[in-house]
Image (cartoon, rainbow, N blue to C red; front, side, top):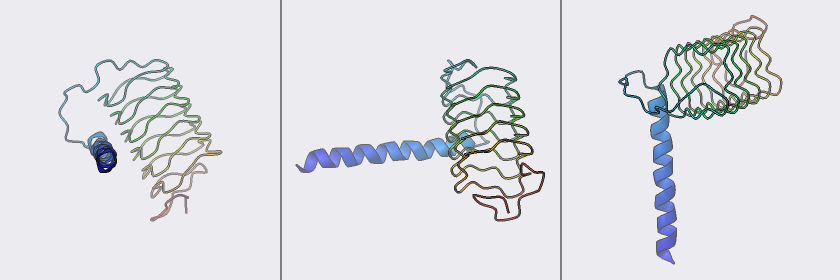
Length: 173
């Protein structure tokens, strides 16, 4: 009776350790250029989790329902791209250009969107739980039904052009 429970607990602990190491890896700016996912292609149902695609030029592409967990897209151009229902959990999209992108129902839990350009983006129903949007530009973005619980918004330009005050978490103040 003791051993099966011990095995389950050990397995759960290992999975949690891997998840936390993924957070550190996705946001770490001191990584080398060794490819982690060499099969990543910007297309519908893309399998791009763990890929390092900093500075990618993916403007206007369709990546509907893509799996992009912990992807590095910092500084990438994703403007006018269709990212409907894409999973960007723990992804690094800092300084990315997402202007006029369709992010409807995308999963962006704990994503790094610091200083990202989300101007006029369709973010209807997007999950931004615990995402970091400090300094991001959200002017004109559609945020109906978006989940902003614990999202860091300090210094972000809000949909109406106002700048979110220091300490803005979960709502722009």
